[in-house]
Image 1: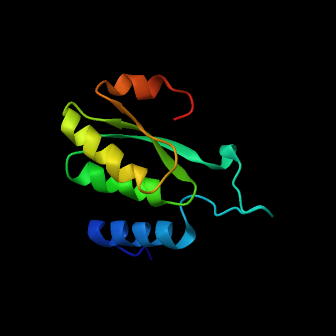
Image 2: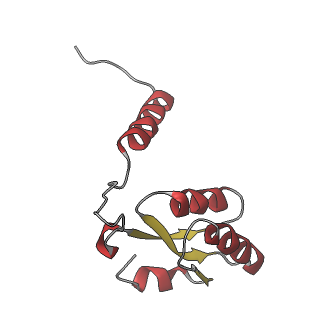
Length: 107
């Protein structure tokens, strides 16, 4: 017998599992430093409102960093870069053309 699950419950369970298990591995070395290859670089596009919150989440996450902040509104880009800078050492690049982020093999 198959169990039916609605969309909302599926999303809640998936989000809880991702948070509980950790989307990125929490690897530690004897010096407490992480190898650069253990860090996921992301580009966040469309950072007015919800995008800013997502960028902050990635910047604060263990094993992730925001490499690019992309939006056509330069004020939104500047605000999100400021937010992200509170959580990570690397300064995110502000761009208006998302293709530039897609061309970066590290992202």
